[in-house]
Amino acid sequence: MTTAQERSVPKVQFTDAEAGAKEFPDSNARRYNYFKPQKRKQTHYEDVTVEVQPDPRHYLSQGWIYGFADGETGYPLTWTKLKAWGVDDPEPVRGIGSGGGGKDLDWPAHGWHEFRDPNEEWEMTLYRYGANVVRQLNQNIDNARQAKAFDQWNNNWVHFVAHNVGAWMHVEHVLGLYVFSHANRSGPTNMHNTAIAVNGMHKIRFAQDLALYNLTLSEEIERFDGSAHLEAWNSDPNWQGVRKVTEALPAIQDDWGESVFAANVVFEPLVSELFRSGLVQQCAAGNGDFVTPTVVGAGEHDFAQRDLRMTIAMFEPRVSDREFAEHNKEIMNGWLSNWVPQCLEAARTLQPLWSQPDFKPPRFEDALDRAKNRFTGILSELGLNVPKELNQ
Image (cartoon, rainbow, N blue to C red; front, side, top):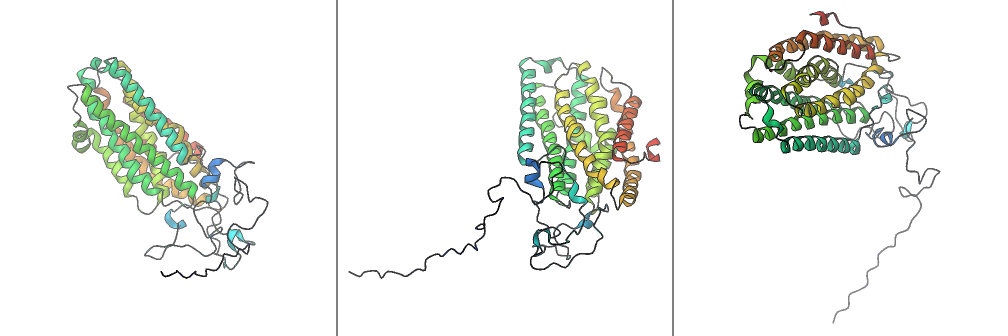
């Protein structure tokens, strides 16, 4: 019998030079102090979003660890025409020991890093919010099914919901998947990208809500045409203006700032809220429908109470930037001149929809005036002047 020879393996010797071995006052802290909180005490939202994105402008001393085929690296600040203070400062020479800021290392674009999402959104909050919305919608729809509420709908309203409310899911789908979800990778900080991604998920969830609602109505109402939204979106003249501008938004080239600005500052108040609040919400109850307003209202709440608040917090600092305020105002005014006429044209193509239900909503012109006033209020919060194109 052969006896295996005992092998000699060096024993591990700890030298206290290993990562994590050093003890310091914050070694056991559950909060981080590598950034300046917006208020006196940092929040959980800040702990999980601020500076999570690696960035050699602050502490990644070896430079970007990845790049693109055209030579750009990391998250280029040139991916929007907007600027933040410090962006034009010369890049410092990085050396050993310059990670974590280093002495006199204040380059660049600290103005971008001032942004905080007032909704304090991150993964956990997004899941909780989405689950609560879907749970409430499902309860409302189940209650309507048990009460046979859909049997009370007249033929005109059945046709209206199938064609027009169904068509709106295409708008939300395009904005969510091809505008916001596309733009979220391009922001200069993790705070920007997280907020834009959440905005995109709100849109995608709302599009899914409308799609599932469409399937439910197809089962509950025999005369409901579940495929009518395709005809409306593809060929109904009333929808081609909205379709045109909706499909133009993803075609914005190389500027995540313009994408978010055009969608949330211009398109949403002048077109989206006009349709959702100025039409559907106004006439549904009169046509015996108490369910559709809850579905559409969930998407309306996403924008009015969350996404718009984030958008104002994102762009207002650029208008009041200590270094580039005038530059940014000029850029945003150019965006307004481009997108306001397109959105007004799209809004006016929807006008015939106001006469389709048996129970009519308030006049289209009144609804459009309210949408313009809403838009003007948003511009006021951003510190921008009302463009002359609004009078078209």
